[in-house]
Length: 388
Ligand code: PHB
Image 1 (tube, helix red, strand yellow):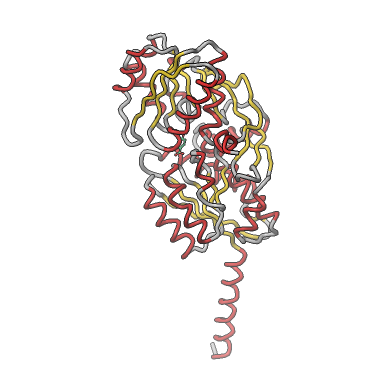
Image 2 (cartoon, rainbow, N blue to C red):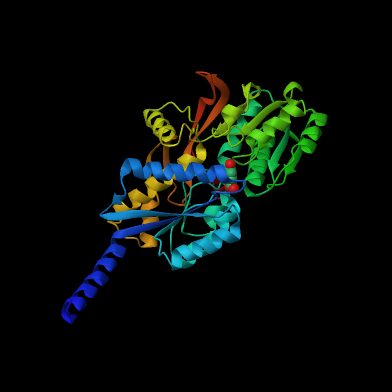
């Protein structure tokens, strides 16, 4: 090649890579793909892939590229990954966040870089207040715990022991449940806690068995329900007459079918069941299972799926602009039908508004499911609602 041609070729490659950069929207997806919370990472990663398989990888004329990073469930790792994604990869959106401490650790980076932080999993109420760039598509624990307390009082339960994992969402669940239960006339006899890492439920279960309340209210994070139930049975609590009530994190679809018939009849409250009766959910469950070797989608997966939907629709609204403030503005007030039912983003708090369902574990076609039997529509996060 002569010199002039070389120069033209070089100029062309610069132009085309700049055009490529401009035409690609990158999403940094930070998830626990290994470690104790790996099931959350697996569910959300699968849901994000499914969303793109069903809706394409181009939106508003831009190619959407998802960069998946494994935070191993450790906040400091997530923080470093978020920094690298913003500085080196120039991502337009940070998304994922399987645990509250991880969502909180990344919030200052979102604020500083003016990049939306789409929280697809973590559920502590305060997360949306950690940055004006946080928008949540998952849930808050108070959303589930308050209706559970209401149901308990209405159904003759008078004395309750609570048992939660000792970190943000567990403390929110304990407080929201206890405050509402007491306000409605119930008595909380004891608030028991277990650590997040490698919990042993035996000592606290023994304590609950000794107290003999009408019911034991439980929150453990997604992925720990099966172990909890195993120890519940080993300690003989299934035969103690103490009713087990819970947030749906305990009877998580990811593990429910393996828990055994002992969980049949457990009443719990949550935002999503794989058994939810809608055309949108039936199609979602079928497509998810087909793409993932029969794996049943859980509530974490819909947080991921809806998070992707929100990003795609926001990009449509901004005409493909990746300006962080414009994207967050586009997300505020957005409403759509999720596999879980109708949902929207509260324009004031950037938190999700969704139905909470009261469910009973039962056998359907030979498999265990959370079968919804009552709906509390359009629930806003009660913790933030109470502050106003
Ligand atoms: C959280 O870390 O906020 C979290 C994790 C798992 C859950 C719920 C909340 O099931």
